[in-house]
Image 1 (spheres, rainbow, N blue to C red):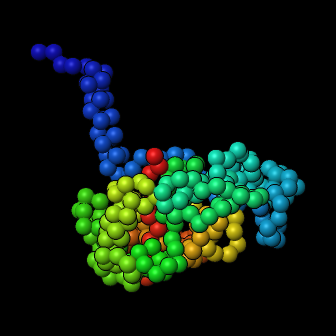
Image 2: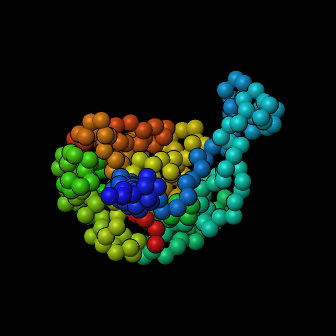
Image 3: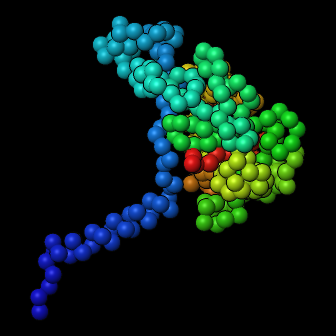
Length: 269
């Protein structure tokens, strides 16, 4: 009786291995929607740790502080933009109807208050907060809650434990449902979600020296505090990742924490 050769067995296994890898990858992480943003850092540190222009003597390959972030990427390439924004960021402000808001001035800023922001680099669309008491008030806080066992990392969190106004309850799941029901910026009643940690970090402007560290012309009424992400902290499923806009730091926080803010995102269309 003949047996298949090692090469024929490998050829047979490859499609199965590839299919398995694709399935595992899809379950583990959503596909990226676009390119990554640069950091917003356009200056460099000199030998005394002072921020200076990225001149060749200080930060060139043979300089005292070589190969710093401020020398590279979109932030210093001065790319042509669809919209506006600091450094290499490229944002289009949207009205509640979904129409683009005209830009004005140099540097270009929105001529009216946006309700959503489209990131033309990552192709993500972001919720803009308000200072009006109600559903999208920037001061509202929420506990992390996700009743879907397929996506909650093994721990659903805590329902309705935050301090908020204008919605059906003060947890992330209820806030998602409330925002989706609004047809915010004309995108319908589905699709808004908590951002992943990487997505939320993509709008951190590390070229700023004080918080909140993001472009306030496009993201007005932002708090400098902690914001929830959708990512469960794998070693301890009762905790989730958070991002702090005071300084762009990340950390993990117990899902029952009632002092964390939410900014929702959706994939672009």
